[in-house]
Length: 201
Image 1 (tube, rainbow, N blue to C red):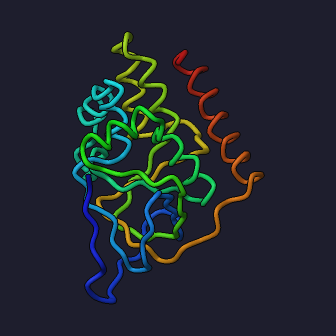
Image 2 (cartoon, rainbow, N blue to C red; image 1 turned 90 degrees about the vertical axis):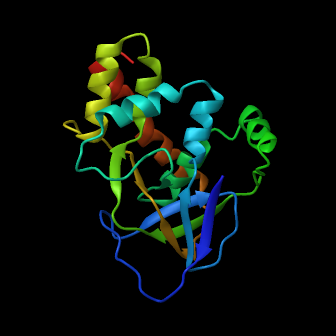
Image 3 (tube, rainbow, N blue to C red; image 1 turned 30 degrees about the vertical axis):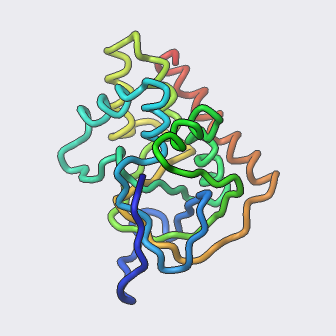
């Protein structure tokens, strides 16, 4: 699906946005390894598997001109290890997706890893709105408003996804505790509740 390469030199560009980003994956990588650019992100693979490519297409349609990073082949991260772990779960490593990837000659590891990563430039958007978009398929005007909010947020959101064409592994970090994971899930749930109040989905 994607490609990665060992870092060629010691020059690193400081990450924009949070000082530290985290990325969870089912693949083991050494420090300095560069993730991406991918042909398709795991998230886009899931959308394709579920017949929801229109979500990526709608977001691409509303993507601001000054926003250079494509979601389709991006590497994703979060501002905490727990949020990154929840994001990995949200990518949908269910048996249907696993079979879909294996048919394409891609393997999915069962045991996940968590890493601190660096990237620049980094795009930031409220992750919960992706689910809202999926539910708004039959409401084109609502879906368009949600897509605009995704790129140019005007409301307060607590759970953000960060994405960039490439990210560099800084170091492995401990897998988050059960309590940390539960707090991350609660943050995402609050955003979903806010989205339902705003758009009904």
